[in-house]
Structure formats: C-alpha cells, structure tokens
Amino acid sequence: MKIGFDAKRLFCTPTGLGNYSRTLVQKLLQHGQDDHHYNLYTPSIRLEAATVAPFTAPPLHIHQAGKVPSAWWRSVGLSPLLRQHQIDLYHGLSHELPFGLAQRGIKTVVTIHDLIFKRHPEWYPWIDRQIYDLKSRYN
Image (cartoon, rainbow, N blue to C red; front, side):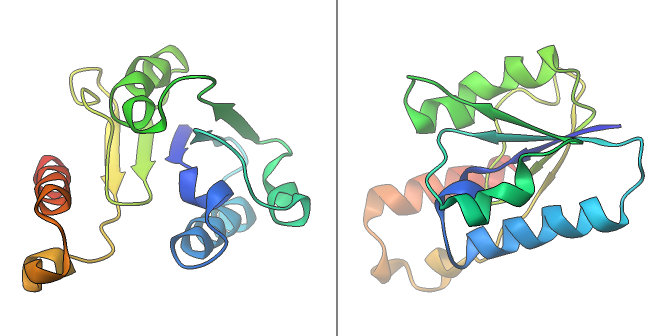
C-alpha cells in the first residue's frame, strides 16, 4: 500500500504537532508491514539533520513543494501529485486534507488536534476562525 502523509509539521515544527507526526511515522515504520511505501509531503524541511535523518531512508520518500506558496500547495497543488504517485491512503497529520482527494479515489484520514477555536472564539481573529471552521468541516 502507498501511504502519504502531510509532513509539514514533521519537518518544520520541533515540538507539539511535530513530535506527534514524527512519533506516528516512526511507529508505523517499526510495526508496519514491509510492503507499505510511505510518502512524506512537505513544503520545506527546516529541522536539524539529527531530527530529519530517521525520515530519509526507504521505505520513505520525501516530496517537497518547490517554489510555490505552502498553503496553496497543501490545499490544492498536492492533490494531483498524490494521484500521480498512486497514493492509496493519505493522512493529514495537522487539521487538513488537500481538496479533491475523494474525486481522485484516494482514501483519507485526518487528525484534528483540537477545536478550541469553537469553544473560545474570542482568542482567535475572525479570519482564522473562518479558515479553521472551513478546514474542520471539509475534513
């Protein structure tokens, strides 16, 4: 099975969501089946070599966005790439999925870590609440 992951946090966030992403992928590598192929999709890689090193060997494949806006790539530009790579299952590790995966026949899993913006909207700017709401409803 070819499995894709939103690896932005894995490669760009040293704590919190980054730790969650790294731990999940590491555990799958340790306990997963040998015939799985894991694809990590990230707009960029910003962490230290020591943190990134465990994620650079087969059966992992890293795909970077290049010179396109990160938010656009994760929401729109990634979907055709996942189809091209024949991804069977895509896991959005931090609150969102690219648009159009269902139409491309790609199964999805999304992790939504919290909905605090719903409980305390006063803590978030209006535009952020609208974006978070859209992402949580779409997924």
